[in-house]
Every structure is written in structure tokens, then in C-alpha cells.
Length: 80
Image 1: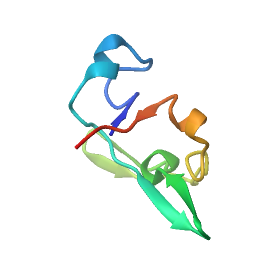
Image 2 (image 1 turned 45 degrees about the vertical axis):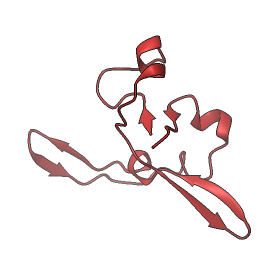
Image 3 (image 1 turned 180 degrees about the vertical axis):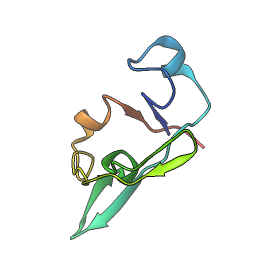
Image 4 (image 1 turned 135 degrees about the vertical axis):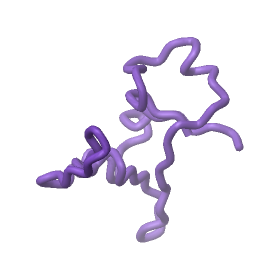
């Protein structure tokens, strides 16, 4: 899929909405009979700076079981 903020884009534009190049991946998980969205990358506080790995102090759960409306503010599924 495509996610805003991976690179420089912070808002949906004609270019980001029409791109055919994926830049991010996330999962949909069947849990207790329903599908939930999970983006463990964006919930992680780990990062690389200048080639050095920096472990985050905590994990968010903002992108665990997010609503489609919230998730769509920054993520867009794409055709393969």
C-alpha cells in the first residue's frame, strides 16, 4: 500500500492518490472472527538515524485495530 509520511508527503495530493508505487506494508489479521488492521511499523518507536538503530522506549497501539476511517487518513491500499 501507500502511506503518507514515508518520505516527505504529509497530506493526500493528486500525486499521492494516483501513484502506482507502494511504499509501505501493514497487515489485516483475522482475530476472534473479525478482521482487524495492524500496522506494527507505525506503532513502533524504533528508528534508524544516520545508520544507527535506536530502540524506542515504548510501543503505541494507535494502529492496532484502528477504524478504517482513521487508518485511511494516512494509509491507502493498492491493487497488486
